[in-house]
Length: 185
Image 1: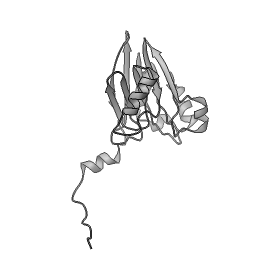
Image 2: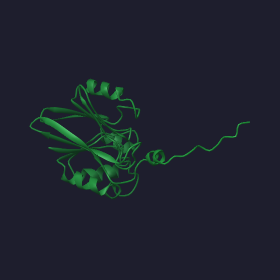
Image 3: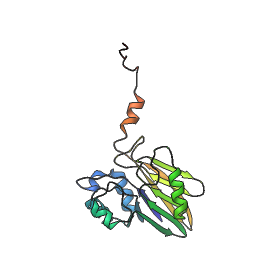
Image 4: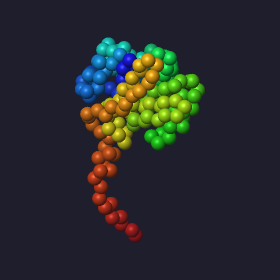
């Protein structure tokens, strides 16, 4: 089974399919399932995505109240004996996944897919932590998603870097010079 995990699409208006990178739209249409870890923003974006794929999702902190009524805050699914937890806010920092480890343990899952930080994270210990980043509003990263493969009860996967707008901080870090002198009085 091929699963595409994504989060933080943040589609405020217009067509989700027109706002997502084209290579991601192709992956979504070819996948057996799509997991979205919240922050669609509008119900229209959720409806459009659920109309083209088998979608399982949770709501995020930026989602409209209408979506928060329809989608759970947390969800656990099981595929070929592998328990996958889905939640939006598990790690609140770009650099510290301690909260996500505790969340995986609390939910008793082998894989935790989460969003909120807009930066891809793949870490393995007692569980596998997967934050797919954001395909439309990345932070300190390029646009991304994650592909998970489950076959005969075995899990594998990869980070997918997408075409699109990258985080401005990356470009700023690549081009720097001497700081402007300060006036010391």
